[in-house]
Amino acid sequence: MKPSRRIAFITPMAILLALGATSAFAGTTGAEFQTMYTTLLDWATGYLGKAIAVAAFILGAGIGVARSSPIPALVGVVFALFMVYVPNIIDSIMTATI
Image (cartoon, rainbow, N blue to C red):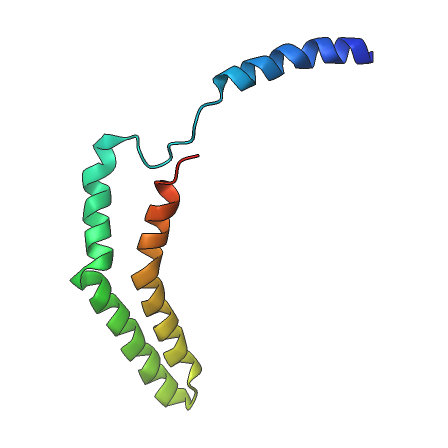
């Protein structure tokens, strides 16, 4: 394909893509899923999330005692930290606009 034909093909496509580009609104559409999102977020940051985090630590500590290794207890602590911070991080990422 000649360069002039290639440019003639690419230019209209680039214009269409540029006109179709809008701001990113990742977390501002889809209101029908808002109740599900709110419920899951409440579970993850509420008592259910705290109970899962504590259970992960206790299970990791128990396995660590059985194996004489602190690594499973540390995995439980890391999991508990993820349960605390990841929902806020995901919410920040999804509601960011450009």
